[in-house]
Length: 117
Image 1: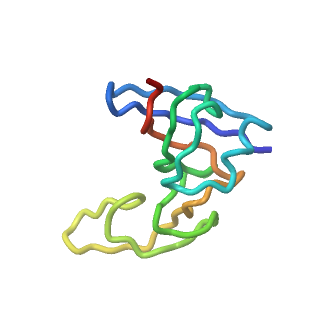
Image 2: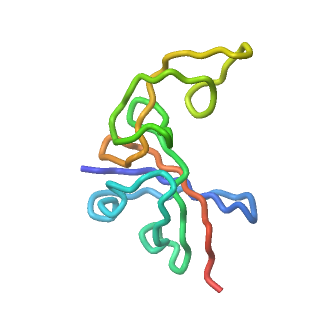
């Protein structure tokens, strides 16, 4: 069954909090994409809204927003998530995970976009 380690960042204060979700509490996140906004009650932060910014799977491959689906793919990258080029114009084929949360994802990164008033 799904077990997620969720890192929730607060851009206003610059702090982050780790939340572990298992079994039934993790099910609402499966099928969500990078960029989706979810309710904070799932994370134990009532009244807040959080946006999914990324994550990584069980083998450490990062989620990339422009790779569609929940599968692992080998794509040519010139920079960004999953590849840091050493030379100008360098491109390389790297394995990355798609932008959909599946049960193979272990870590999910989120940021708070709305706080209760």
